[in-house]
Amino acid sequence: MPSGAPSEELLRRMKSARSILVLTGAGASAESGVPTFRGQGGLWREFRPEELATPTAFARNPKLVWEWYMWRRELVRQASPNHGHYALAALEAKFEEFTLVTQNVDGLHQRAGSRNVIEIHGNIMRSRCFSCGVQTGEVALDEDGQLPGCECGGLIRPDVVWFGELLPPQALKRAWDAATRAQVFLSVGTSSAVQPAAGLADIAGRAGAYLVEINPETTEMSDRFDEVVCAPSGQALPMICRGLGLNITADPAVRLS
Ligand code: BV8
Ligand code: ZN
Image 1 (cartoon, rainbow, N blue to C red):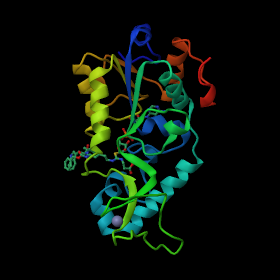
Image 2 (cartoon, helix red, strand yellow):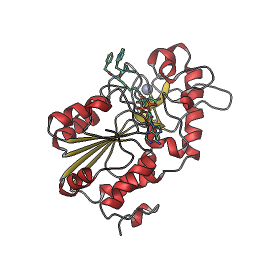
Image 3 (cartoon, protein in one colour):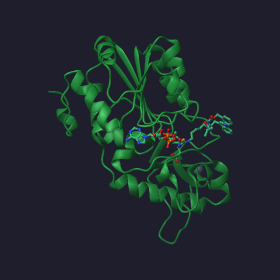
Image 4 (cartoon, rainbow, N blue to C red):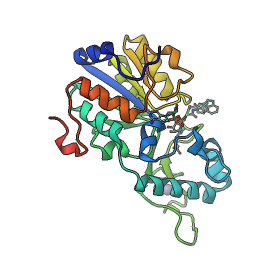
């Protein structure tokens, strides 16, 4: 039965856990003002993200796709980590093994002080060549809308994973390994609509982890979780920290009391 706060059972399990795995989605950045993919804010001009976050869309109209990413980069630049990001950074320091797998490409976990972050869908602030794969930092369209090109002649693209593209194998293997070792798995702010990320819950569950979903809405996978905390992550995650006696500061350097 969904509840608005983490249970005593969850806190008990986290207190005795050696290994924790957290998967975050766009909802974890919602309170930072970054629109989610499938919620109301997901639209840009008349396009849905699934129409633009594909190699086909980029091949058909690379300028349009770059304009979407540059709009999103600006949103990310103006965004700051929220209490949920800082809570995850504080939790990381408390456990022998704490793995944070994120579907988000905004880098807000790292800006909040999280260190062991696996970006399974890449990072929007980086770019790479579509042909030779060389990473090029934050390259973009120039002011006259010229497409950025690589010395090899290839087109440069945002360094993210598009639909129909394989996830970085190393990152995915690390995420799968962490799922087999976790005693507690927190799914935070994701609709669990995208594979293979959403499958991490099943792997962790089969390996015996206590599965928790933190989301103000129920999702297509909610009934597979042992516990559903129906609350925004910026509220639920600090409650978990307080339940574990952790004090969160916005300054990641002074994370623990
Ligand atoms: C792959 C990076 C092998 C780019 C993203 C047919 C053809 C091809 C592929 C497929 C196919 N059918 C299925 C697939 C697989 C496909 C897939 O899963 N499709 C879905 C849509 C059906 N997956 C892939 O293609 C993956 N690759 O499988 O390769 C392959 C290859 C070829 C053919 C077959 C297989 C690649 C997937 C990666 C795509 N890239 N992003 C970019 O960012 O521009 S995915 C995109 O969705 C984002 O990364 C996002 O993070 C991710 C998941 O969405 P969510 O994060 O969950 O966001 P969403 O808006 O959905 O939900 C937000 C939630 O937050 C909501 O539930 C809301 O209630 C909640 N919320 C709101 N506020 C808060 C909150 N929660 C907490 N607190 C709050 N305050
Ligand atoms: Zn190149």
